[in-house]
Image 1 (tube, rainbow, N blue to C red):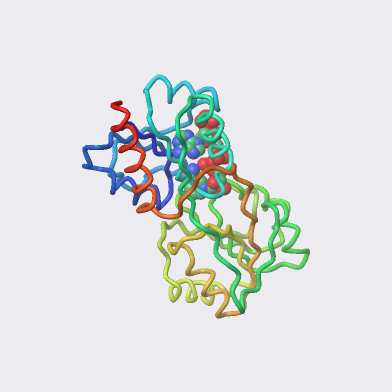
Image 2 (spheres, rainbow, N blue to C red):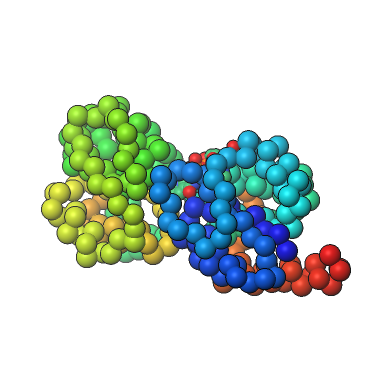
Length: 252
Ligand code: NAP
């Protein structure tokens, strides 16, 4: 059974490992190409966009893909919307693999904002020491608030930023809570800006902020299309196994 796995997440990598070497499945992993040196993948991999809904639809049809799995990042709303529309247009079943958001726990000092611009507004006028742990794509928005000191962490260097007071750390998770606490203390961080990514790999900063009573400006999750979804790689494998059995029964 031919599978196109839209990836870029820990869950996609876990599903890739489950599918690799299983001769019921002929799976290809697709990455956006956002990181320069992506983690080694267990499956054959293609990199780069398809060219919108039409490009993805054509790709699914030309390669006779049987199932599409959308295991992209919860903030990658465009590709998820494209996947939902292309699945209908090409008549290819779609499964979402989506990690649940972190719930707000007692002691969490979260302020939710719609986007990076909202985060800039929430930081206020007074200079603060800010930890930006939200990837690098939305960083240019913070040029509107150059009065703050920014500690920026991203997988790849953020490139040139119009910000006078910055310190950059390039690192790839997982990040443990104890090390995150030390980082927040060492840099005298007063406020954290991040996304509600869910999962365990980047939860350490949330635990550390709760412990140190540091406020968190949380970028809201974007609206995603309502498609059939599971929350783990194992559940996705069960869904794909059932799809494979259904295809076999139909003699495809
Ligand atoms: P996006 O805005 O949903 O996607 C933009 C375009 O990138 C898509 O329309 C598609 O191009 C291409 N694309 C995205 N994922 C793809 C995949 N798996 N395979 C092939 N093409 C793909 O997503 P984004 O620009 O990657 O990121 C948006 C947000 O998600 C950011 O906030 C970012 O920090 C976060 N994020 C993304 C990733 C990731 O791996 N993508 C990882 C961590 C965080 P075409 O229309 O040409 O097909």
